[in-house]
Length: 145
Image (cartoon, rainbow, N blue to C red; front, side, top):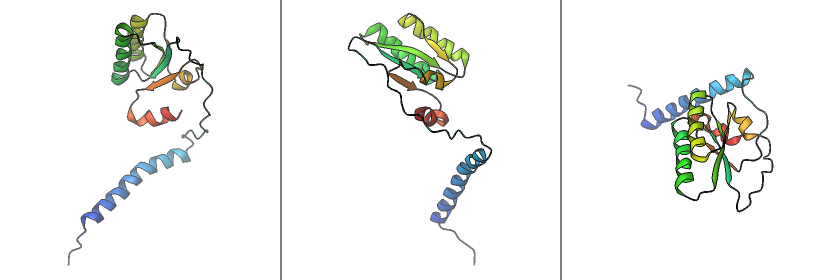
């Protein structure tokens, strides 16, 4: 008699394999000391926002989605009385970040700070918000930080 597996057995076995494939590399990285296990610091107080003050934001990730968000803010700055300013940009890819910076400077004037490390952007106390437009695999960690 042949050994027939049900669909439930197949799905259960597939779920176990997927879980193992996900967890084993993380366990190996933790064993090698490659995982940052430092506690997430408590948020510091931010600069208060007066009614006439612009909302100052930073953007992490200036790829396709991040640049699209930057362009949307630039359009708002030109066409609506939106009181929002992009104060800081962060990306690992310098050419993309410089292209996004050019859009921001053209739309709102002044200068915009750029960072290669997101923690440097997050250390700023003058920002009221941060827009995260990173790839999915790094989005959660950036949001935690």
